[in-house]
Length: 364
Image 1 (cartoon, rainbow, N blue to C red):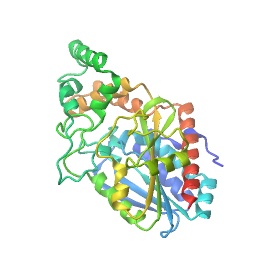
Image 2 (cartoon, rainbow, N blue to C red):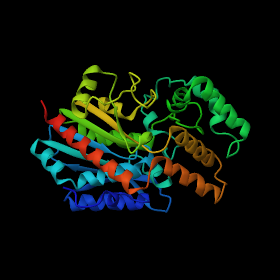
Image 3 (tube, helix red, strand yellow):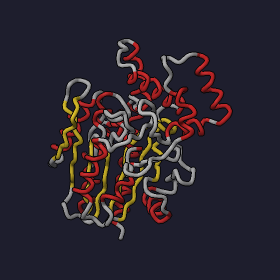
Image 4 (cartoon, rainbow, N blue to C red):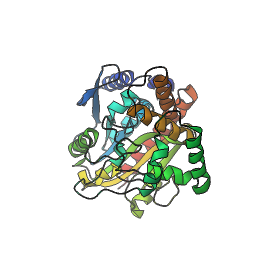
């Protein structure tokens, strides 16, 4: 059982979160392999993708537990990882069943530290997994509204906001969300930009997957996210190819409530360049089953507006306090609900999902 209060697993800065994670690793008697990031953090601190393996190198099954794919969402995911590192029952059950637990803390440490959803290249990591020698997807719906999303001034004019509301009234909120969040490759200073080259985080994660996933027969993955759905509720979103057998496995592990972007049951839109599909490319021998645990925070309209403001700020670095501080705080609050009650729900659902994944991986 976990002795700490749930709130103690969480932090207020990247440096604090990383410190707590490394302390939990040390308390568990484990080693960390850190991949240093080329940039520094907001407070001048070093950044890294930290990798911890709890289990033998030749384990037949591996459960991957990852945080901060979307930078600022790492405040939630880091807390969940720290809680899981302290769960002796989880560790014992995994060891007894020949399952290695693989923690990757800070997939996108730059966004984690700087309170951004994107990498230092302004790229959404979960839209960046493409073969860049091939033509990239074209998001015509985003092209249509690009001028509305990141306007010349912030806050936007009343006329521009009226145009936004007219679009939503005519097409629906789901269409607005899908156009914005599906991924786009033509507006490098826009939202949900997938990039035209592999990012540092993309390449480093592929390296980690090859190092730790090439020798297992079964691979599970729980990737922690925030920003969609009711506050504190962890939607379990299928994170594999559009494959009926994999979806059936995911629902057998995590319950029939597992949703999918492929059948429209998820709160997420259909996305391009998904990170999780790298599991098939880097660990082709493994039977792969994954999900994104998507914890709700605030309504989707507030999340998208916070992202719009943050991108405007990124495009206007000359802006100073207090406007800068207000935009950044709004962005973090959109992805991290800093209350004991919310954090308790995050930990409880993370623990349940990890135990279910261990049980699923143990089945032949």
